Image 1: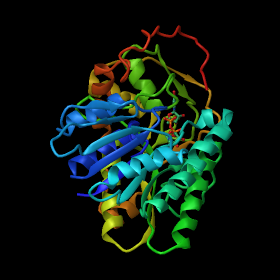
Image 2: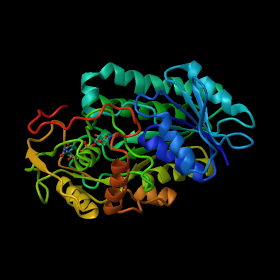
Image 3: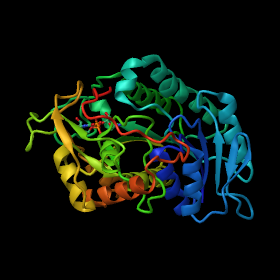
Image 4: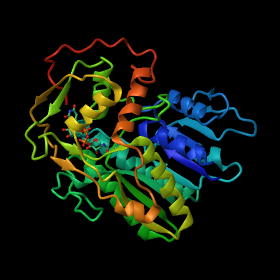
Length: 378
Ligand code: WQD
């Protein structure tokens, strides 16, 4: 069992990875500023992992209550704060410190990054600098970084290998490319660094229990959470961005992977880093299968016995026709591949949405369904 730190571990990918790591026997410390995550999510992770009752022990700290100390501890904190980072590392120092960090904390909305580039550079890049400095202070040189397929930009390469050129087209993608460059330089600067750059394609779905899932702030930018909110009546209809793409049915094709497959991929990457000599590992995490917007919508309808209203509108700026991973490296280097189907993604996503129509917050203002014809937000 090793002790790992998850930055942003109370968010969508982080909370599902936290559960997978607990189930693999690790001890987990989380630092999260709750800008896109919640303590409630980790309370449910503790419940699913069979830990003791989840409780808040101070203004900034939550933990389970197992005898002998909790295997899950959460600190409210900002990765840009050295003080907050040291508090999390020092809490774990008892009985052996943090042996690896999984770095999820970051902003990830493409449209928002166009409007707020400085905030994206500060959180995503400066935050990683502060984290690496703290890792140096605490003698930790193993890092799994949450990177993204957005780095590849609007490439025509199908499927996309890790060797494809990096051509980001928005500030969010540029910050991911900058962090990958930073980590490459750090790995080359001193012996001992074990780093995995995991480039996610389109993570979707939820844990099959329906207890944890994706809880976007405000109007979802991404297809799957929007589709789930249409299914629950929180949104009136889906806008399909473009029906004239050069694809089978004219709608955009993406590589959707179940969030639990992605979570397990992080566990495998951690195992490989800890078992092998120091290295920098760059891997695409995707299914290798492409599905169009309409294929996903039809699968969601068939799997859950629902009918989802949609209208086809103009293309979204910055979109590409097809983005599908070549995941063969991940299979070769860590024996990982996706195991869950598109139907399981739709089943599990709906289990979460239908049981949690307002996400984790029970006190969100009652939603007023949008009127048809509302202008599409960014
Ligand atoms: C998927 C498809 C849209 C919304 C982005 C980021 C990427 C990653 C995942 C962080 C496209 C269409 C969407 C809607 C639609 N995030 N669509 N109506 O753009 O592939 O990737 O999120 O790492 O980095 O770039 O995901 O879910 O926004 O879009 O028709 O309301 O659904 O045109 O074809 P995307 P998405």
